Image 1 (tube, rainbow, N blue to C red):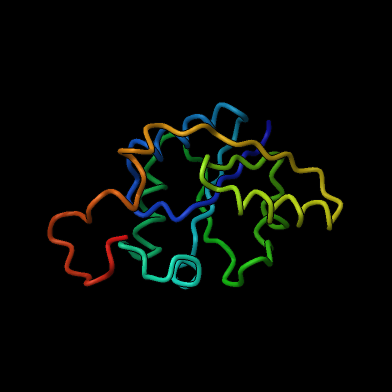
Image 2: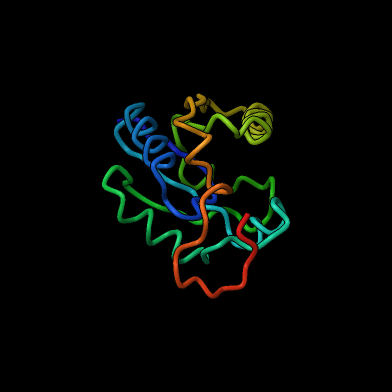
Length: 145
C-alpha cells in the first residue's frame, strides 16, 4: 500500500480542498496530510491563518479520505516530517510550484526515492482559500487573506 502525503494550510476545508484530497487518495492506499504550523503560515503568507492549527487539524481528521494528519515542521525547509512519515509519493496542488521545487531538491539531496505529482485545480476561481470569507461569528481579528 502506497502512502501519499499532501501539504497545505487547509484554512477551512472547501470543495477545492476536498477535490485535491480525493484525487491524492486515488494515488495510493493511505493519505497523510501535513498541515502548516501557525508560525509557518505567518512566515510564508505574512499573516495568521483564519483558524488556529488545532482547528485545522481537527477539520481534516474528519475528512473520510484522510487517514492521518500531522503538523508540519516548525522550521521551514527542514523536512523532518518526510523522514518521520516516509511517504512513497507527495501530491502537490496546482499552485504549489515553489514547494514542489523545494521538496524535490531536498529529496534529491538526501538520495530518497519519493515521487512527486501535481494535482490539477478544481475551480480555483471559486475554491481558493484566500477567496473564501471567514465563517460567520469569526471574531479572531485575523486578516482574511
